[in-house]
Length: 135
Image 1 (cartoon, one colour):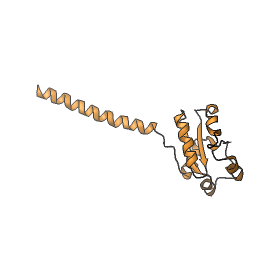
Image 2 (spheres, rainbow, N blue to C red):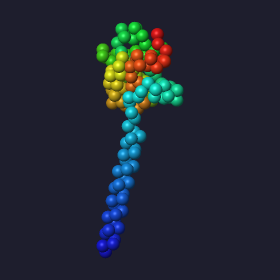
Image 3 (tube, rainbow, N blue to C red):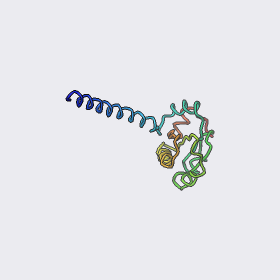
Image 4 (cartoon, helix red, strand yellow):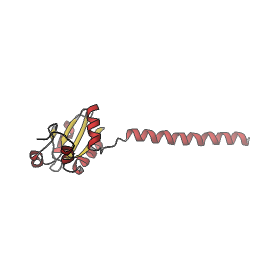
């Protein structure tokens, strides 16, 4: 009798441990890291092309931006939030600003609105210094 109870208890404990291990691995896969380095951006962009959005002000954008930038939506004046409904949630998005702060906020806003493939690639000057073409 005790052997049976001990065997059942052991199986239950092992089952709970396995469940915990596998559920944590699933969570890690589903939780994509948003903030990536400039070097990571270079690598990921070649494998997974996407839409590049500058979330700085129009004035900052006009002073210089990435040639590859597809859009300029100012996070601070509401342009960015207003565009979310018009963006395809299945696309991959790369966001940048002056330092990486606003683009991080914008990336997190997109994630909260159901976008899955969103990356904050940091600041404009860091991207320019890394060799991305600017104008």
